[in-house]
Amino acid sequence: GYFWVGIKDYFFSRSEKITLYADGKQLSRKIFTLTVANTPQYGCGAVIAPNADPSSGKMIAVIVPKLSVFRIFPAIKKLFSGSIHEISQLEFIEFKNLRIKRSKPGIYHADGEAHKGNPNLNISIHPSALNVIVP
Image (tube, rainbow, N blue to C red; front, side):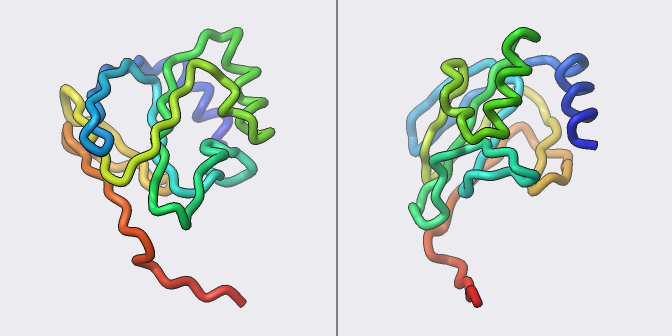
């Protein structure tokens, strides 16, 4: 199901200009998608942030511009082989606090679920805030 949704989005969605404030540093980018992660994997074997470490106290923003049709299929292969960080068009930004500023409200996804959101979104990490018991 995710594959077909991704194909539809690729052909029918447009890039969007956003401004990011990552730990106070301002960046303006035209993006196709932006992912924020504190673990390497989306799920189903897709490794979006290979260097993400949930114990680091930081998150990673992965900025993805719209890739040409000739680059998208090799990129998908790299996504599932854990080597997506080798794609030079992608940016990986570590942060503790991130503000995303858009020109208008839009859709955000949180853990695979879509939500209508405001033009501004603030994301912060709270290190060691969650105790996990592993058997």
